[in-house]
Image (tube, rainbow, N blue to C red; front, side):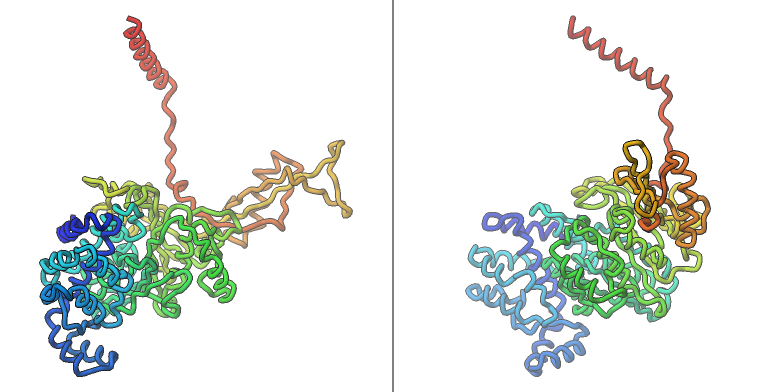
Length: 581
């Protein structure tokens, strides 16, 4: 538990009465951010005020302030927490002035609608007490590290979401899941991250409160303190955006790299490509309201657009983010890029041959972009206990991994938590994470109980239409004018033929051979009058993850089952005798 988070929650208790618990966040979070920025800016406040008096042009002022303080943001107000309470009657106006005089890149308070909250607090007679409470805590970076501040945000956001009965997973991802994702994302490139003066870019299109970005940076700096990770993100939830941007501002990052908006309909970084991309998009969220814009983009941009390979059902937008990230990887000729994305099980197998999801998997696998998929333990996330998977994409795979996909069953690598947090009752400990990473590193030498390495073609299949003849009253086949048998639509069936059936050449090259061999062996002996309608053959791809790790467990011997039944019957008879007695 975060001590700072607990403190913030205790301040929220002062709002009881005029505010309902689900409204606490609109007050407490922006005040926390304001106090954090207040403490960060305090040492150079006098310098900035002097520069503001000298330079009227905001662009020139920003240059001069950055040169003098080393920070890209500032505040020119004469007010701060140090003197706000001195003028009791003017507190609301002075606090509003303070918020208004941040540099333009600090737009977070607008997204909290903070000035409205100031007026509401004043009307409720709570403004002075809230300001006084926050003045009492020192959030200077010397006292509260960026990591501790991140922990506090995570704790407080979760508490507020619980009060509002919202889904916490929409706002942030558990840190243990992020750590594994980050380790896998950087695993193949670790050697490239240890040189002097390394600069890499990391992008999260569903940035939430910034947890993924922050932990990824921590990971890189732990390996190489001289490295620099330029962070980019986009978020459409106003409050989450405000928290994410505030957190990164406090760490000195370029605030313009965090954008507000819907990634799927308004990509804020259209022309940019990144070294690393990561995301935990919402699961099973309907994108029907954006369908017109997304379909229009696909049709207008053409074969090289981000949604060109296909569109999933409008009931679930996860694969739109998968396509978006695949499109955002740095080009192979520029060094390539990697993607780590957490999704539920449906993108593995949802949709038959020729459907949008199948076409997306086909494009990813035929372009050799899928490097590994890791199954996570269930009950890992705060708002859902369902099965989840980490997909790792790489457009410049290590030579040993080309044409191959590694499946890792990490469902058994977890540690029970002392206390559940929502649906989250399990966590991935450092030892658990190390075990998954070892399996990934061992690759073809890994324990096959937990790791399988398959070719891209192992996931491909053809859906073949098998026809039966339409029969007349006498049981004879009905023919058309050209003497061809007419099919009976009621008897029509389909069969899925794996690309690699019977050892045929993989992929399209072995299409006819594999289908004919399958038909002759699996169909013809049972229905001699059937035939294949070759024109209706469709190509499909699916990743039947659990099938590859299925272990047959033989049923118990009948004698053992009978013995158990006899014991139960005897127990029941004894109970009945007691009742009769």
